[in-house]
Structure formats: structure tokens, C-alpha cells
Length: 624
View (tube, helix red, strand yellow):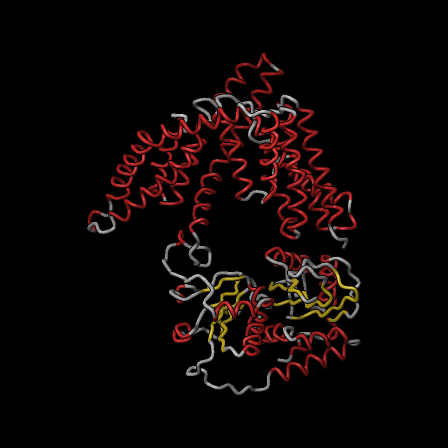
């Protein structure tokens, strides 16, 4: 089948009127509907936008390839569109897109259609062909260009058997979520660059029609290295013992030379297939020790947060009622009992943290000794530091027991989870915590708390500035969580609920989404319609102390967004300490502001930080 059978003159737009990404998508969908290729524009657009959320189909060099495979397509087709001035398509290289190929594949696309779509994708790797398309002035000329290019591509190519040659040899796998376009573009980019470099390469494609050109065991064994340019899972066990370079499929298109050089030099981690889900990343690659520790820690914190939020807000509500409605004492006592003290949600913070850290390390057998170790830390004033240690200690104690018991007879296998792991795990973890670590960490924790309580204004402002800025560095990532966990630790360890540093991290965490919202409101001409709508949502997220609302903007423009937000958040955090503001609630944002000892100054701190970040980002951002 010829490419021009699915790319016909009635699906071409030689002068695209759209000026934004979404309007360009709408204009191309309208052309498909007009040509009778799409029967449900709403469903088709939903699938197109779903693919865009996974990663932008603006592949760079001025080309965008939005695509979808859905029952909304009556007949496979491609829209070719040109924009004279180009438009912002959130392309991977940050440059405007001017050539568009919208691929519409039917849900049951046959083999011929899929191969034709793959051939189309491969042609767009050739810069000379792309430049000819840019200069085309009529639909007839576009048809002629594609027919000529396809005829040249289909000419048989004589290949010599390189199995015995001494030229460098690498293997690769390419795959994208939909398996229509990027899979084959990455394949051709790698092949063309390898040919140019004098390197022999074999590329397996994991497209929508399954794996093609599957790598053989002999090829994998002979290869210097393996390139896996994929945005979905691929079969990894076969690469055991080989240097494997894992990268997004877009890097296969944009950085083929870099990937090939690294594969030749074996500049990649050696892949070891363990068969265990927990020890690997989603595509099977073993993770680093630091990544593993972070994953275990985040498992504990994520399970702890509902107790922080639920208990903290109810505790704050009880303070509010007690302050303004003293007659409702019975109700406030009930709220206090279920949220704080020795019986409520706050009592579970450290045990839950420890238990789920241990569970992340050693699976279910680690949960019980981890929780008990955390409880011992909480009741002995070892606090969060002791709780963190208890979680990791319990997890690795149980892992050690699993190794020691691995040679036990199969007839005793059933004793491990119901007797050996819980009894010995608790005995060892509890004993070490009770006799050694709890006393040590109680002393350390008391020293830290005493130092924090004795901070002068200047030092407190510096610490508040650092904590506020950390909340905006990664907006929910390790720095953010470290600052928040520190404040929670102080909040629950000082024996009172003054919440001085909670004010700093809450203000710092509220600034980024509020600053984004403000920038999209004031500097409208610098943002797309989608970004302005997301900006409105950030008002709500910011007021609710949900920093993650700013992440999409930070991902698209990290330097400007993160720098601007860190500056404003740091100022807000520092001001809360300069004005000696306390917020006796670990979450809630604007909804617990009334509990602050200086509510007006707390809101003013947030406002000042927001204005600084919003204006800095707005003026710094390039106009669309």
C-alpha cells in the first residue's frame, strides 16, 4: 500500500490557521471528519489528548505527530498540515512546530495499514525530505514527494553478513505506548546514524502489531551493549549480564549518536534479571541503593500522610472550636481524643511510618516488627529519627531471616510466615530498639529539640527560609518531603503543638501553585488556553496546601518555574519565622489559617511570596 493511500489530498492543510496546540489538533480533527475518516470527533480527540499526556508528540525539529488508535476512526488516515509561522506544541526540544502529521488508526487496523503508517514515520527522519515538504506549495507536490520518497525507501538494499566482521555491533529495542509512530522513527534514526558511524546495529520494534525483527540470543550475546529506547515495558530477561542503556523512545529519535556511542563503550549499568518485582524498576532494571532507600522511605511517608492530614485537621478544628465555642467542650474533647493524644491518629504516625518502610523492604513479614519498633520509638521519645531507624532495621532484620531460612526443608516452609519471621523479627528488632537505639535517639532528639527551641530570631529566620525554599525545589519530591517530615517531627516531638516550623513549610508549599495561578492570570498572552485553565485550578490547590499542582508547569519549564518558586517560597518561610508565626496544624492551608497566632501575618507571608514568585516567573517567561 502506498503512503498516499492514507495521506490523500482531502486530508491536507497547507496553511494551518491555528495558533495554539489544542486549536491545531481541533483543526486537523475537523479535516478528518470532513473527509469521512473519523465518526466520533469527541472520542478521537480524547484519545489524542490522552496520548499527549503520556508525552508530547512534538518530536522536535519542527515536527509534531499526534496519533491515536480508536474505534472513532472509520478508515485509517493521515492529516498533513503546515503552519507558516509555527506554534508552541510543547515539543521535546522546546521549539515551535510547523509540520504536523495527525495519524488516525482504526481499532482493528490491518497489517498493511500499520506497515504503511510505520513507513510514513520512517520517512520523517530524513531531513532533506522534511525540507522539501516545508517548501511544498500544493497538494499535488506533497503527493509526488511522498510517492518518490517511498519508492526510494523500498529499493532493495544489499547487505553483507557482518556476523564475522570486527566492526562494532549493538542491538536495540524501540517502543512507544501506542506503537504507531515513535517506535519506527526511533528505529530508523538509530539505523541511519549507525550506518553513518560505521556501526552494525539490529533494532527490534515493539509496535502496535507486536514485536518485529526480534533479537536472537546470538545477536544479544555478540552485541557490545543494548539500547532500550522505550516508553512501555519490553522483555528484559534476555539481556541478563549485558550493559543495558534504558532511555525514553524520544531519545532514540533525538540522540541516536549519543546512545550508540555509549552502547559501544559499554557505558551503561549491567542488567541482572532477578525475577523479583520489588528489586527492579518498572521495566526490570535494577535500581540504585539510593533510589531503593528513597522508595522505602516514601512508602512509609505516603501511608503516614492520611493520619497526618486527617488527624491534623480534626485536631486543628478542635482547637478552633475550643477557642470560639467553649460550651462545645464534649465535642472538642472527642475530636482531640480521635486525632491526638495517646489514643488518636497522631499516636499512629511513627508506627505507621516505620511499619510501611519495613514492609517495602521485606514485604508483609516486615510490617509487624516495623510497627512495634516505631511504637517503641514513639513512646520512648526517640521520635521520628528513632522511627525511621526502626523501619529500616526491622525490614533488613526480616530480610536477613529470609536468607538464613532459605535452606530450610520444604516441609517447614509454612512455619516461616506464621512463627519464625514474626517471633524472631519482633524479638531482634524490639530488643535492639529497647536496649540500644531508643536511648541513643531519645538523647539526640531531645538535643535537637532543645536547640530548635533556643534558636534566636535570626537563626529561626534562616531555618524557615531554608525549609520554605525546600518545599518548592521538587514540589512533592525528596526535598519537599524532607522539609515537611522535619517540621512534622518537631511538631510531634516538642511536647506541645505550637507549629512554628509548620508555618514555614505550609507557607512555602502554598506559594508555587498560587504563583503559577497568578502568573497565568496576569500574563495571559504568555500562556496557552490549556495552561490558563490549569492556572485557575492552581488557585484551589495552592489554597489547600497541595504543592503538586505546579508540577506540570515545572516539568515544561523547569529553570524558570522552579527558580521563581524557590525564591518566593523561601521568602514566605523566612517571614513566618521573622514574625514568630505558629500554626498548630500539620495540614489544611487556608482552612487552618485561623488557628495561627498571627493569622493576618501568616496570610501576608504567603501573599508576599506568591507575588514575588508570580511576577518573577511571569516577566521571565518567554511570550508565546
